[in-house]
Length: 263
Image (cartoon, rainbow, N blue to C red; front, side, top):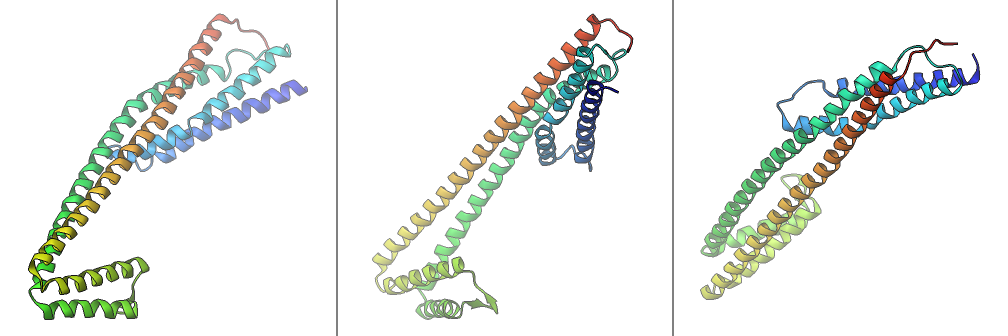
């Protein structure tokens, strides 16, 4: 076996391994099959498209091997690997083309579900705000209970523990803020007009923070969906064009070529 024949054989072997490796990955990724779950579909399509270039590289290596055969005056007998390879290219082109609308539809469903969760979270946050304000109003009418709440927070802040468990630094900072607010409200409770004014300020502040968090969450969800849609959608579309071109041009070349005997 001369050098060109050996090089051609290696290229065909490596190309075949690339293609078989992709097919094995596709089967592995599909197990366990859960096609009715949009999140599973998004993960499966993303992984498949990210690996989509592998068989295209394998096909290029196989074609390069056949080109070396023809250039060395030792053309391969018949179509060999080319016929099933071009058929696979057409099939992959169709698959990647169909994955584009499937992926975009799944992203829209996932985004709608996430928006619904954000809406529910905002509603729960509003309920928590109203409950907190009602609790403050109740505490302001009971100075002894208000002092007790302040003392409890002071104890947790000093020890850094609650019910035997260490409190994270962020939660301790939040407790300090609550203690300071309770102390201010205790002083303001002696002046009802000022107390009501301060209560309204706290309400507006908490609602503004809740609205900002909601807007940020919605913006992040939309941005992530757009990024995923563009990246996977365009990549899948380009792969579909590439595979379809390889398959169509390959079959056209086979149809116009005459089989020759191997030397």
